[in-house]
Amino acid sequence: MLRITKFHILLLISCLFLVPLTPMAALAQASDAHVVINTYRLNIRTGPGAGHDIITNLPGGTTLAVTMLSTDRKWYEVSGGFGTGWLRGSYTVERGDWSSVPWQGAPANLGGGTAIPAGAPHLVVNTSYLNARTGPGAGHSVLVVLPGGTKLLVTAIDRDGKWYQVETSAGTGWVNSSYTAIRGNFTEIPRTGVPTVVLPTTPAQPNVPSGTPHLVVNTGYLNIRSGPGISHDVILTVPGGTELAAVGIAPDLVWYEVATSSGNGWVNSNYTIGRGDFSGVKRYLDALRGNTPRALVNTSYLNIRTGPGAGHSVVTIIPGGTTLAVLGKSADGRWFLVEGDFGQGWLRNRYAAFRGDYSLVPVAG
Image (cartoon, rainbow, N blue to C red; front, side, top):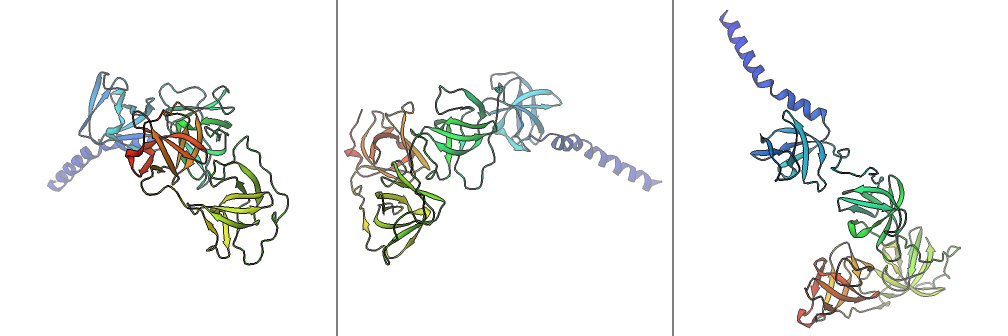
């Protein structure tokens, strides 16, 4: 009799410990998107902000289903035994699939991106919402609205370098790249409004004399440009397998000057295979050395603008690693007037490393 009594007592104690765990486990399974409070205690409020009244105060480790996100994504609407309320997301750990969680005040025509192949150039929306339009400009109608964080496959770039053609869940549209983060290599993304000539035969160039250092195109088609950089005009486009005699090498060792039937041009050697001895090929020396003021772009891509401010139009987009001569600075010291193959323009200096003697840089503009 005594053994039975002890057994029942132990069973009762075990049940007391197990019962409170059941709702939490069920919640984690029933809700794709949920949070776990990771501070000692956290206030649940009537709205998304510290100025709203406190509904309750929950201990760390509590798991709550997420039903909505604030516009700035800093506050989460959650549900629990208290009903519905809002908490500060930075004091929680996110769990589950958040792709279907609605945003507060989200527009009716909210859309998304499409699948992006590994390594493909794409944009990431870095504002709360971004309009994708039917054409490259704010005057075109809105195709779909994209929430922050949406990834978009890029298929073309407008001639001014500001608007990008992307693939969305609603079809092909255009977005203002100023409100996105650029990811991947955009070197061979076509520019709209830039005429190209595809040579019809392969090989497209005269046979390179034996022993001549040359490049062999190892991509489907490759643009030959008027200068060493993607900001230069396309002279012609040649098919894969084309052999191009090398006559010069740019300071970055990436762009090569080649001879073609249309005159000399420049190609990105990353899309070619080198053949022969290049030791005798002319090297273009970089004049930007020593105390000469210069800026080295240290982000993937950087906009060059017509004036010292984000409100000015984009002249061109410069890839990371490019060195540009610094001619002047803005009055507040945040923007550099630079010069390159594109002419002159302004860049935000927080995205570039300065080299040379800063005292030689005057205030410009």
